[in-house]
Image 1 (cartoon, rainbow, N blue to C red):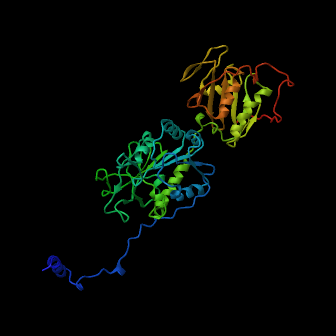
Image 2: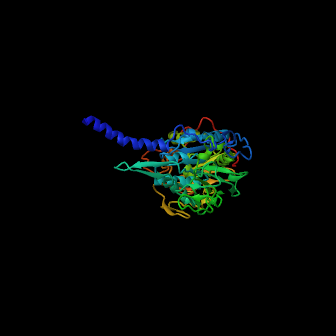
Image 3: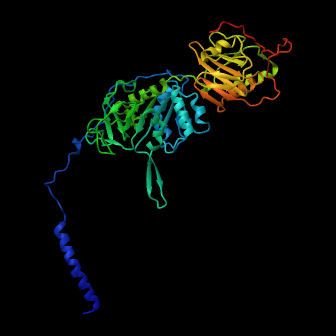
Length: 480
């Protein structure tokens, strides 16, 4: 027998057992009439919860207000995703601006009503955190939205990925206000909208933010811990945290004790089509109202946004406007005109107008009433000025800014050591940059540079021929 035949016989002997076993287990053709096929015609897919009420149209109630949205911290969202939010803001007459970093956050927040941050992936600097806290203290609204499905992925030298959650960068914003976003996600195996991470919430705290809500659904949400604030919604006993697999009192949404800061562990509820599920659209409407309902309190740090009415500018004591004084005053006019506030030169405060008062450390009868709210008394030929709550400051090289918000008008007082120093202080204020000033509430102490021999103001009495006056001199009226 040839070698070739031996090989063929051996291969056949190996293949025959395999073939016999296959025929035994896999009989062809196979048919089992006892297996019942599903009746797909009777199968139904659960419908998402429908809204319990319609969202009322709100038009033009916040005309002129500005909502600033952060896009400078690697925010893990696309502006097109939050189109329902942007539409709701615009419908109320407010304007949306995206902070791209072209200007400082401080300059942007001077005029904003609300600051919104979505899923940041880089840290806020210390200066920005301080600016945000001042913004909230002056009446601004801060809204921070996180999302457990969005995280920054970084890779080490070996290509091993590590996820850095957005809560790491969100919490420094809200922690000063007693709120914390937890690095987890909430889930409910029984009470959900088609998936255990799509959690339904029906237990709400009484608040304008939860008015008429029957049910909201969050599609992947961090829990929010309110140390001093208030949880606005609470999951049932079967809603658990992925961090501990424990439940009880877990919340996706909370507001600070001062009612100025909102923290949400998710923002998918405002994205199409999830914004149409249950009462998510109504919740979105309430959140937009919350963002726009705040009233900013005028503060020196926000100059030139101190005034709501036209401004009268008056001089006190024996100060006289000269030709060379118009430069700084003109710059001050331009600064306020940029925010739609006209400045009119007056001989006395005009009724119905806000006021800027120019003076020196030399006491005068017409300046005294404007210093009274600050309990400041000026004395002749003194080397220092006593400021209640601050102490003594040198009367040389320092200027004072005093802001008083009154029931009928707002008043800003600019005081310099001498008439020659006053133009420098006016120019400083007109620039809008008060970084060289120490600001404490309604008081500012500003370091003044040398003005040389430039005499913008004169204490000496001059004849009308020697003194330039504005072309139009409005008739003075009684003070408001």
